[in-house]
Image 1 (cartoon, rainbow, N blue to C red):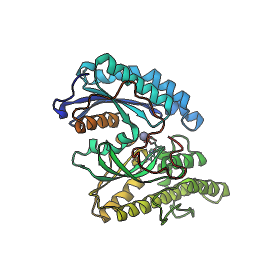
Image 2 (cartoon, helix red, strand yellow):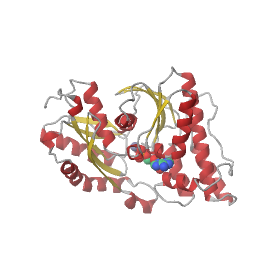
Image 3 (cartoon, protein in one colour):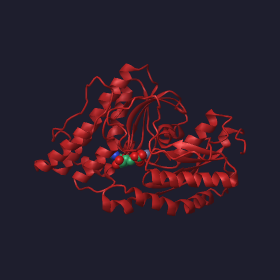
Image 4 (tube, rainbow, N blue to C red):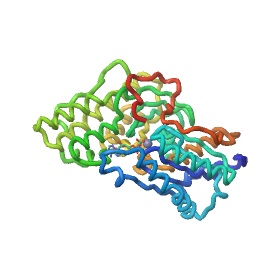
Length: 356
Ligand code: KG4
Ligand code: ZN
C-alpha cells in the first residue's frame, strides 16, 4: 500500500455513498475543498412505492456507480493516480446498496494500489459540519437526525463518539415520511411536510410530545405518528394544520431532549445538527435559538451536505488520515454492515435501530 504521510491539506480522497437511495461520488481534499461531486437520486424509481425498495436501490447503485466515478474524476481533471485514498460507506444502511458501493471502493483501491477507508455512514453525517466549518473543533454536541436515526451524541474526536440519547422507536425522518404518506404528499416526505407546514397553524391540532420531560434521555416518535394518523382520519383538520402541528410537536421534542442533554453534561462550546432532517428550516431555527440561550455556537452544514452525499464520506476519510497518521488502509476483506453503532458502548435502547 502507498504511504499516506505527506501534507494532509493536499490529500485527495474519493468518496462513495450508496447506503440508501442516493448514489453519490465526490473528491474532497484534507483542506476542505470539494473538488467535484455528483449525486444521482433514485426518487423517481421509489416514488411509486411510497418508500425505498432495497432491491431497486441496489440495482440502481450498481448501474450508476462506475460511470459516476469516471465522471467525477473527469470533472476534476484527475485520474485515480491523483487520489490518495478511497473512502466508501461500509454501513449502516440497506445492505445490498452498501455492498455495491463498498465492493466498488475495494476494486478501485486494489486496482490503483490506494488505501481503502471503510466509513460509517453516521460518521459521515457526524463529521460533515467540520467539512463546512473549519472553525468547528472537538468536542461538540451533535443532534443527528436522519431517515434512520435520531441521536444526541458527544463528538469528542474523529472516531470518538459518546451516545447520549437515541430514539426508542422511529427516527424523526421516518416520522416526517410517514406523516407525508398519511397526508398523501408523496415521497420523499420531509421537504413536502415542511413546505405544507408553512401554510398551516401549528396550534390547530392537539398532538402528543412523547417522552417530553421524562427522566430517560431518549426520543420516541411512534406515538406522534399514530396521533397524526388519528387526527387525519377524524376529518376535523386540514392537511396544512396537521403538517404544521406535527412539525411543531417534533421540534418541541427535540428541544426538550437537547435541553436535558445540555443540562446533564459538561458544557459544549457548540451545538451542531446533521443528517437529512437538519435540512428542515423549523428544526434549524429552533436549534439556533436553543444554542443562543446556552451561549453555544450553532453549526449546521449547508443543505446539500445534510442529506446523503459522498462529500461527507470522503471528508470522514480525510479525518481518518489526519487522526491516524500511520493508517495504511482498512483490510480489503472488510464486510458491509447493516448495523454499525457510532458508540459501541451505548446500551441498546428499547426498540431502537430497528430500521438501519
Ligand atoms: O440523511 P438522509 O438523507 O438519509 C438517511 O441516512 O436516512 O435523511 C433522509 C431523511 C428522510 O426521512 C427525509 O424525509 C428527511 O431526511 N428530510 C427532511 C427534510 N429534508 C429531508 N425532513 C424534514 N424536513 C426536511 N426539509
Ligand atoms: Zn444519511
